[in-house]
Image (tube, rainbow, N blue to C red; front, side, top):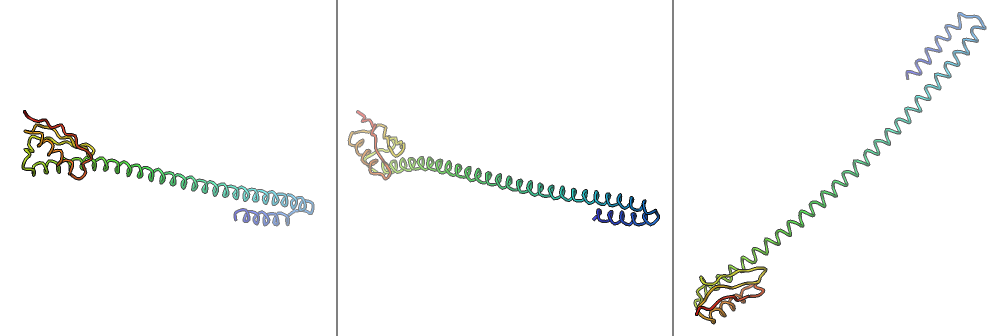
Length: 171
């Protein structure tokens, strides 16, 4: 817009100048004015071309920035998803270990309760430990029959994988 205004002013100024000059001066001035107009038009075209190139480069840079941002967001999402999956796996493993401990404690409790219910056995003299479903009986009883009965009771409890009878018979 400014270039067009300048061109119009230059043309007006040239016309006024020509009216006051001789024929030779007018022709010379017209040539100079025409050269100035051509130079101005060439400069305007150069500016327009450079502006267009700059706009295209800016658009390309914006597109590249968008792609980079999108890629970074995708990477962050993948990392978050992987971390959440790892956390879930670790939580499940910890819960499984806690479940194993609770199961062993539950088995120990059930074996002790069954021994207390058996009137022939003094359950206070028998220790019960459970590891991964394997029960170990220890302590001291009055007879081998009582030790065998304690083993049979432990074997009958749900969840018991095996029974190791380390009960000693008192002489």
